Image 1 (cartoon, rainbow, N blue to C red):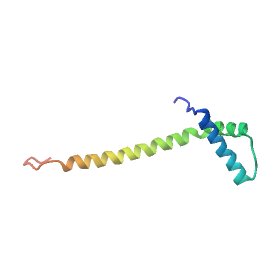
Image 2: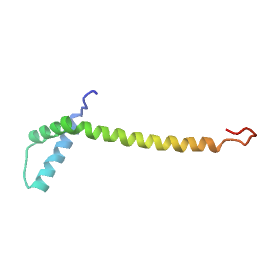
Image 3: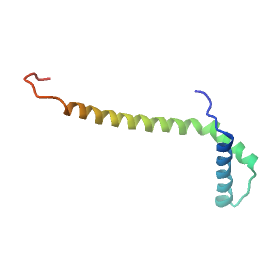
Image 4: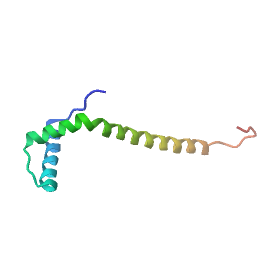
Length: 84
């Protein structure tokens, strides 16, 4: 799997979210650099879990849609004397 990369703007936005979390939940201020380092750490160590969860959710959605499409195709079947 190739590494997931983010634009500078995305990285700064995520780091800002981390700073806000620390400030509101932990009553602790951290700078932008430590927030970016923490974001990268979690991305490297935990990112695959979140990525895989997204894949599993997508697979489930696709399977449900395929079942629905299969039902719709069978609904188009015309009656004949031949039994399947």
